[in-house]
Image: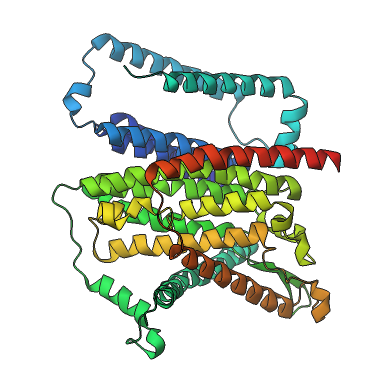
Amino acid sequence: MSLTFLFFGILAVLAIATAVICVSNKNPVVSAMALVAHFFMLAGLYLTLQAQFIAILQILIYAGAIMVLVIFVIMLLNLGDEEKLREKTKYRKILASLLGIGFIAMLCSVYLGGGLGNKATSPMAITIGAPAALGKELFTNYLFAFEAIALLLLTAIIGAVVLAKRKVD
Amino acid sequence: MNDLLLTIIEVLIKGMVLVTFILLGAAVQVYLERKISAFIQGRIGPNRAGPFGLLQPFADVIKLFMKEDIFPKLAFKRFHQFAPVISMGIAIVVYAVIPFADPVKITMADGTVKEIVMGVAPNLNIGILFILAMTSVGVYGLTLAGWSSNSKYSLLGGLRSAAQMISYELSMGLAIIGVLMICGSFSLSDIVTHQKGWFWHWNIFAQPLAFIIFMVSSFAEMNRTPFDLPEAEPELVGGYNTEYSGMKFGMFFLAEYSNMATGSILLILLFFGGWHLPFPQEWLGLQTGSIALGIVQLAVFLFKLLAVIFFIIWVRWTVPRFRYDQLMHMGWRMLLPLALLNIAVTGIILFII
């Protein structure tokens, strides 16, 4: 058993545990903090795949920026009454469980179709996680997609500014 | 397996030495803070515990340990207990990627040359991003402390800290990009090696605007005056740590001083040539990789660190605290556009050269 596999096992179990806490806990702040912990576990999983740059961006952007905003909003709103937040509709639960079963079936088919066991990492994969290799790929082979995403984000920012600028009556 | 075991032992020893130095460093900073502020205000400062009051920080720590640990009745217990741990843990974990000197080569008994890096994992190729990510996660300690205390002063302090840190993180990150463009690497070791030689190779001369933006934002990230709104005593009693007592308060205190050291270290590594002397090391006849050079570099690093910390404490008693709207105005309307401008100008100049 390799060290990577050991780390993978620990991180995977913790990731699932925090995800379950995030969904099942009734306190919104606990849920949000569990999600933050989950992002850390995901970053760890990326590290076991040699993708350091993605791992650190996961923490920097999701755990460090987006979730801080979420917590900020939860604290400002002070959502105390949990009874009001509880789901009352039945059909959503049924739909959600159906989707969940479908997802598990999909995962199983992929896993069984691809065969079990370790696959050797190619030497390319080790350098591809480093920032330099990633940047080279982004600005040569995937330049169009990169620019398209940049444009999309710019549109979103302009939209946010327009919405925030609107005078409150 | 043997190599792995050796690496683990090496990292453990380095980690223990580092943590000891972080805690001792916090004590030194507390002492300096008290003495320098006393000097600036025309007082004497601590002079009872030990010669020149040198034992004062230890007396403080013992006092904090002895105090009763009080839980507010309506506090959210789990997070109230966990928040100082987050703050302190994040403050310490950052040191994992900080290099302190060039690698030292030691000849082993069997003639093999072993290279020892000065730091736990300083050659990480995402070093600076790791530090940015960890400091951005550090906000949770303060916000959770504010929220879980269930007190209006704490909550206001927590909210302020979250808003302030999100705002200034942005200009801090963008200011660093200018330096990264020049050095062409995320690794802190590479950035410092790039500034080797005469002192005009230091990044502060190549990136003066980035230096100013980074310094101001790191003051805000450290919650130091003039940006100490999360714990403004006259308005908020004590800010996010109002409801804390004993060593849990002490942990916030330690985390704050450890963050101050981290901010100073980043300033030195990014802009002041790190551990390099202001002139080429060959002038002193020091060989690359020798133990003597390692010691000299550590001393230079420590000297620069103390100078920056002195500057930070000096600023505290020189500049008054900002008003909240001034703080936001400065972060979003001045520093952020200036940082973007800096990136654009650096890009154009690098393209021409």
